[in-house]
Amino acid sequence: MPLEQLRALQGERLREAVERAYKAGGFFYRRMRDHGVSPSDVTSVDDVRALPTFRKEDLRANEAEYPPIGDYRVVGLSGSVRLATSSGTTGRPTVTVWTDHDLNIDYEIAARRYWREGVRPGHVIANAHPGYLNGGQSQVAGAAEKMGCLPISIGPPEDEALVERALRTIENIPIDHWHTLPAGAARIREVAERIGWSGRMPEVAAVTPMRQYSAISAGLECIGTLGGTCSPENYRGAHVAEDYAIVEAVDDVTGEPVPDGQRGKFLCTSLGRDNPMLRFDLNEVIRLDRSPCPCGETHVRAFWEGRMQDVVTVQGKWIMPIDVWSEMDESQEFAVVRTADEQDSLEVRVENPAGGLLERLQERTGVPVTVTAVEVGSLPRAAYKANRVVDERP
Ligand SMILES: [Zn+2]
Image (cartoon, rainbow, N blue to C red; front, side, top):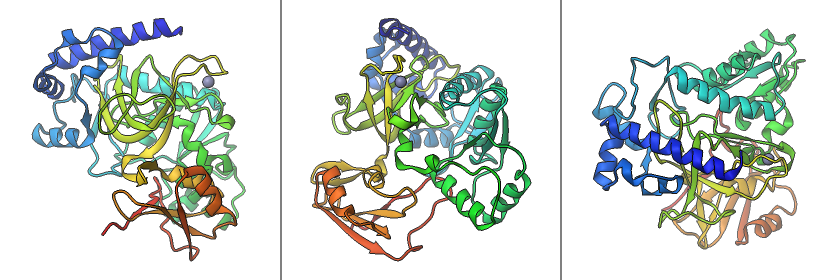
């Protein structure tokens, strides 16, 4: 869509979302009222900046104050067709409900990503996203079904015996794609190799560091799959579904937008939904690129850099685990050590460090680096989301 038309559509959908949320009289109404903003203050896409931001802990507090699921939605339990929780990696999971309309928006955005990755109707997809109450598994499976694919949901590789049993069960089914996060893919490969599995394993590409730039999520509670890359090999970032979202990268202190190409705090506003989310501060770091993409898509490209809690500030610079990981072998285990709120050098622990790593890290980050070799197997392995930062502040 031409940019001018896209901005007009976003403005129209933002106005509609703000009005819906305000009229509902709950969480978003109170926050806007306390912030001195009313729907009439929001007329174009840029006016999103007039709205107050909120964090996941605000939703958690709201759910506790207004049980059972809070009052931050326009449509509640009655009128919803699915309930699930987020992964809970950063605290107690929040509850998410979907109307049929909102579920189909999620499927459409996910389908755009899957299509760009080569998924086509008729393909078989091994899905290792978390299940049970967590919504990852059902969202991935639902989008795949909507595309006419066959998802096989084996669950996350939390338990080696379960992974082994699942791999044995599907050994003779031809798998076209694996859907899992990098840490999970590595774990599945470890088990598959140990048991001499003959099926198609998650690709090596699935565990390369730069893959984190190939897709972006605004959290299950906002938009589970927000975008995907048009070219996994070129690390062009993930095209955000801008017709369904406004994405901002802002300065942590001033709240002002950071220039394209710079790391900023990730804010997302969902558009077109029954249950809008207005300026969700994900407590994560992104970088945006609005330059024309060789593929011809006009939607902004976002690079997901990591979580705010994983930022290690060295001589005023935000260093993220991706900066270290991208200079190492894909399967190498490492940890970044935080020694102070602002430290003078970057400290990295690595199992089996390769020669020249120190120099490459210094070159990439532009700060002094210390590399310490540690025993193989001594750093923690993750089942779902890797934790690469060790906090050793006094
Ligand atoms: Zn592109």
